[in-house]
Length: 287
Image 1: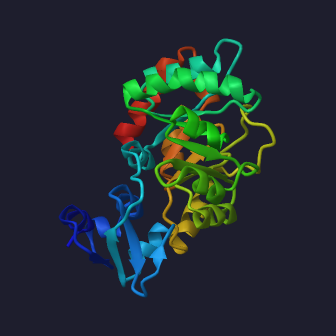
Image 2 (image 1 turned 120 degrees about the vertical axis):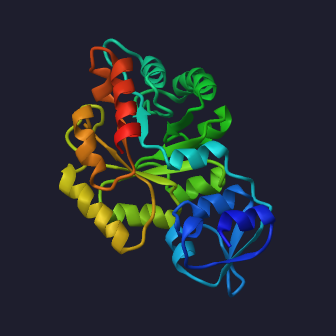
């Protein structure tokens, strides 16, 4: 029986090997979204098991849980190929950048305002959020975990020097998206163990939109990381980030990453809305 059919039927089911939904990464998220929990054959609950543990191990069953359900947008986000990270320039404010990205077809916005105080970030978040809701876009905020709950955003992205993912999970619960930043495979192992929903991995190349850059990965770096993740059974969405342009997209996506995050390259275009639209179309059609 497929997991989705079992969930609809409301029956307990052993999760083991097989085709269909049982062999797909999003099983763990689907289980949580339907208000179920995963139980080991020994009877102990797997609170934040990795997708690979659930998929590759037999002797698990799915039972009803009193947990809060995951917001529908969260599951959609894990499959998204395009994230826009807000930035400001001489021409555009943080708010402008988000609005143009949405108009161009991006449906995953990260509000990142590293040099702003929390009051300014909250004002901007409350301006962006209604437009995200109107367009069916997912809205996450960089770093500020409590602000995510206060404004009703969909989740948070945490940098390497921000709050640990597992601590944020205790504050936010399972109904919010939590992403983390990685530059190495070791970073990814740590984030996976802490229960991250996705990973922003980079930088691809030098970028002016972020200070204190980690070593650049390039195509070979992404290929190596994706290969190691497969070898170790880590199944998390990887979003490539850092200096990526429209022309880079085919070769970056060919490495096996899940999607890309853009910022400065869009805002430097003569028409940022059209640039975003072109990128969104390319990702939908060619990948």
